[in-house]
Amino acid sequence: MQIVSIENLSVKYNSTDIFSGVTLAVNAGDYVALAGPNGSGKSTLIKTMLGLIEPAAGSVKIFGVSPSTFADWQKVGYIPQRLVSFSPYFPATVEEVVSMGLLSGKRFPKRLSSKDNEAIDRALSLMDITALKDKKIGELSGGQQQRVIIARAVINEPELLILDEPTTAVDPETREKFFAVIDVLNKNKNTTVMLITHDTGSAGRYASKLLYFDRRVVFYGTFKDFCESENMAEYFGPGSQHLICHRHD
Amino acid sequence: MEFIEFLNYGFVQRAVIAGSFIAVLCSILGMFLVLRRLSLIGDGLAHVTFGGVALGLLFKVSPLYASIPVVLLGGYGILKLMERARLYGDAAIGIVSAAGIALGVLIASIAGGFNVDLFSYLFGNILAVSREEVALSAVMSLTVLTVIGLFYHELISVTFDEDLAKVSGIKTKTVNTILVVLTAVTVVLAMRLVGVMLVSALLILPAVSAFQAARSFKSAILLSSAFGVLSVLAGIFISFSWNLPAGATIVLLNIGIFCAMFLFNRIRVIR
Image (cartoon, rainbow over all chains, first blue to last red; front, side, top):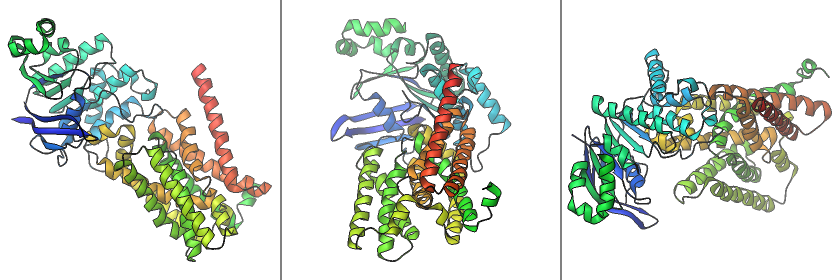
């Protein structure tokens, strides 16, 4: 089953092409590492998939539906690179922020059940932030805030998890724990994962596929195929290709 | 004069009732505006109110009623400038605010210059609030508070992060429209209290004072409302006792509360 399907997609910003003619599909249970140089349009690609950016041409479908008409957002978890409009004075506690992920899918009056409270405790414990439960989010470090956002995204156990460089601000120990959690969701719950990362070494240990994007799809396939591809050796130069594959091995 | 004796006057009772409703309304709505960096939308829409009041005076319609559609139009203009012209909030507010003031001055000039009525709307006079205005304030405040209650979670989510809210399935454009409409109605209601010139203070100050001490969103709402009501009640009492302008007194009391809360927060952090 295709979870994401993109056909001939083009995105422009002020009449300048960010990318054009992109076609790809992500199947249920895939774990795709999305890599590419800075400014290559990786974040724009996933924001277009999520309906946050309007495409100039082509089509995007998630779970077979265009993002503009898609309604079942509880199936999707998203962790942005950084919060766009978050104010440091925001007076919510960590618990209140994590619970937002659950309340969005509820009807009025939006109340948390005891089952929801257990899910919140589980998500907090998973990201090792139980002790911060009653702290104000604005008082936390960047890394701690990112762990809260990750907990908020995984609390619903989404079917599609989209992550934009989620571990840039977190320490190595938390990063390893995070990748292990995502791996469990992917393997045990068949969660489809799309992960933007520059750390192809770490991602390669878990991801089943590599999508190398540079304003177009340069490569999309398994890590094994990437490492054996002569075209990629030519594109990257043997040294760079070896670097990704060596770290992957 | 004692506070209880002071409450025996009919005009004071009207001021206290209307003031309390509008203070709670401004304090809660202001939290969302401040956190979304739209604090000055109150100021911008208040300037548009000036145009609405002038229009009302020109056509001999109640300035309160004349202002509501004009301010709603101003709020819609700010939203569209942000969405369509991709302007930042401050630039969009600046454009609409300037248009409102220019409209007001032009109409006042056509009508034969500024008069006492127009100045009463510029600086407010809560002690001159009529029974009709009290009823309107109460009904509109309860309506706005009900809408905030219905969309409470959506408003918090969009305020926290618009992209995350959108990916949670929240219709962020609808929530933004609701926020601007509520602000427009609130600005018109608050105009009689503190006047066009000071209305944004009532939206900003109780909220920023509450943020100094609040430990959660719910406690921030309670604190902000308490500061808003306290400043209005004390402002009415002080202005009546010492014959001071009510609007300015209320605003200065709010600044005093903010300074006290800021110091309280600093001391708490140092300890």
